[in-house]
Length: 229
Image (cartoon, rainbow, N blue to C red; front, side):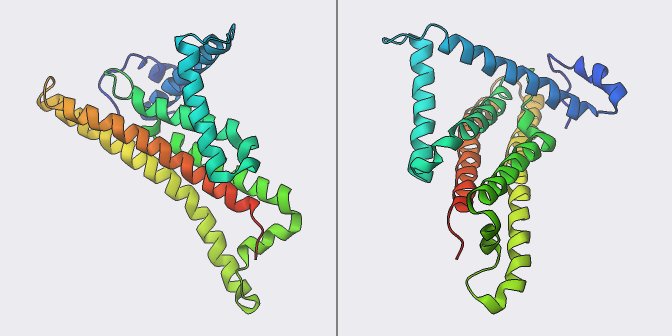
């Protein structure tokens, strides 16, 4: 999907010699923008921390505290080491989703390459954690509870684990790309009144999709920490 007008569309010409399509160039440009925004906000929020927090520090403490509580409630105390990864994914996906509601901005999560990258990070982390936690015994997660069914269960489990990448990728991409298409159509038909309900719904969809991705990431990593039977 290529937008007719974006503030950073000049990146299309900069990345064209590298063989990157216009949609991919838009996703890269706005991914860099979101990374810069999150970096700036984090620096401002943590610079000169006070016992009585200011508005920005208080706002970020509420967000970070909420994500941390969710990690602990879902994964337990042993899930705290994964808090930086989960929080980073959650904030990046949420801001990526929301930024697409601003005219002239493109949500990177509406590009399948971005969502696939996030899904692969979760997939790789899950199995690195499993191998680190259990060593060779991690193979038990793929063999099922019945010994004589182990060869068949192994292939079924492997397919199931790879399907997680596809599921995470397509769920987030499909929802955000579909919403972008609907908004573009409505803006073309009635640029002032009709898109407003869709934009309000887009805020809800943005939060839900970020929450679902974060929750599934925690569940997958938590599953790799458990003992295989």
